[in-house]
Each structure stands twice: as structure tokens, then as C-alpha cells.
Length: 427
Image 1 (cartoon, rainbow, N blue to C red):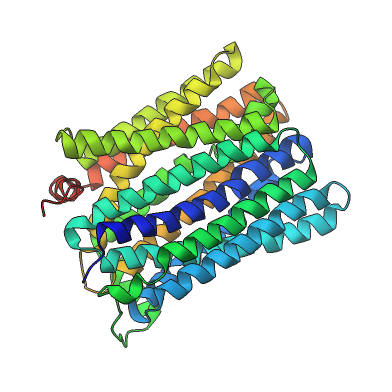
Image 2: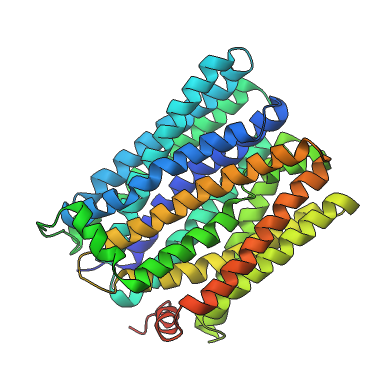
């Protein structure tokens, strides 16, 4: 047996729970450190980069999923570790103002746990999807789970932002605790029993991890796609740690308003993903390659608009939502290509390929977020806030333009077209 549509949606709930916890640590806590605690943006940037850097172990988790089985155990164990890390991270924010060294030490431990939890749970979940989903349903499964993750991020950011005003340490800890406990409980209920009912048990494989990874890296398409993921995700994540501080410093947003801004952005990502699904699968408009390029080009234009608004004033929310929409267009098209490519090449390496691309994404996210925060701090030494942040947004736009050009060269037309048709299985 393979995963039914109901089981795919249940696994999507797990991904949604992961996103709900992570968004609090990468957006809300980041903004509190930069604006309320007046810390340099590079500090939370380094912490988020740490959690991404630890995810370089994703290929290991994927290889274990290919050869060792017991994916449910890794999924829920990772989620529990993630929740513990998020609670520690929130507590650390309350410590930093009065005891900086202690708060920073707790933060380092917390973000290390967050990285381990996301890597173990997220990679094992994708490996389960890749190996237990019918080939014709793989792209659809990836799209469903990603949309649900974005929905979890958007709803959590919006609700948490509304509840966070007026800000207090106790209110912050209560919100984070409620989200973590609820997410772990819902994730456990959603994943329970699925693995036992599908043909996803891994077979023994005598090949060691390094040899298996080298085998995947030798595949030209897998290697080229890894490089594309790194470039595109560097652009995607450069604004992650500076958009909310930008809104607070340049536009005067409160903590609750800037958190809601993040929620609106992720709501735009959701709309962009739905747009591609309806247009490409329902109406047959465009190929995955064209949609990836369109998403990158639109993201660059939206970043240019955000930069201009910092100088002239205007509806920041609208520009941020537009950025989210084009980010979503890019993301869902890239996911369709990824799920199609995961099943190509040597058998029983789906988890390893997904882990390799997940590691590239994690490294790019950590590098992009830290680079964006560090460049913003550096530019603010000689420029005003609006100009300093604007320069970083312009650099991010340039990287999106380069990613669009690369996508047009390396994403083959035949394979992705088949993958997009598979978003709506004919059976």
C-alpha cells in the first residue's frame, strides 16, 4: 500500500506544526532582540544561522530513513526536541536584558536544539513522503504539505502577533508554550499509525553513508539542482531576519504589527502556491521552469518596491504580500521539480537526495539570513536605516535575478512538465 490522500493531508498537519513552532523563533524572537532589546541584528542572525548550520546533518537523517526505517520515531522525536528548543529560546530572550551572558548561553543551546529537531523531523517526514507516496502523487503530496506548513506559519504569526500586544515577558512565554504543546500534541495524533499501514519499510543496505552520498552527488542533475537550491534559497532568506526590524525602525511598527506583517507575507506565499497549482495543473498554463523563473523575477521586483517605500513612504504591507506571493510561486514550482528528481537515479536514495537538497537549503538559509543581518548592521554604520536596509534588499533582488537565469538553464523542460501534470493524478 501507498499513502492515501487522507494520510498525505495528515502528514501535512505534521509539517504545519513544524512551521508553527519555527516561525516564532525566526521572526518574533528576532524582532524582539533587535528592536526591544536594541541588540545588533547580527546576533539573532548568528543564532538562526546556527540552527540552519546544524541542519547540514540532513543527509544523514535522510540516509537513515532510506536504510533504517522507523521514520515516525524520528519525526516525533525531532518535533519534541524542536519544541524544547523553542521554549528555551523564548526564555533566553527574557534573560538577555538583565543577564546577557546567561541569556546568550541559553540561546545557543536553544537554537542548536531547534536545528537538530527540524533536521530530524523534517527530513524524516519528507523521506516518508518520497518513499511511501505513489510516484504520480509525489509532487501533489509535496505541494499539499508545503501549503499546510505555510498556513501554519501564517496563522501562528498572525494570531501570536495579535496576542503579543501589549508586550510582556510572561505573555511571550505563555504564547510560545501554548504553540509548542499544541503542535506536538497535534503532530503526534496526525502521524500515528501511518507508517505501519504503508509499504515504506526500508530494506537493508550495506553501503555506508559517505559512499551513498557520493553516489548521489555523482548524478549530474542532482548536483546541478543542489547548486540552484543554494543560490535561490540564499536570496529567499536574506530578508528573513531584517524585514521585521526594518518595519519597526523605518515604519514604526509595534512588535504585534511586525509579527502580523510576517503572517501576511506567509499568507502571500500560500496564495502564490495556490496560484501555480490552479494555473499550471488546472488550466495547463506554463511549465515548472517558467514558473520558477517568474517567481524569482517577481520577487526581485517586490524587493525593489520595498526598498523604494523606505525612501518615499507608502503601503509596506502590500509590497510584502506581493513578495510573499512571488516567493510562493517560486517555491511550489521548485518543490515540484524536487519531488520529481528525488525518484530519479539509483533506487532507495530518495531520502538521501531530499536530505542533500535540504542541507543545501539550510546552509543557504543560515548564510543568507546571517549575511543579510550582518550587511544591514554594517551599512547602518554609515547610512540611515532606510538606505542601509534598502541596499541589502537590492542585493537580494540581484541574487533572485541570477537564480532565474540559472533555473532557465538547468531545469529541464520535459521532466518538470511531467511532474506538474502529476500534481493532479489521473487515477
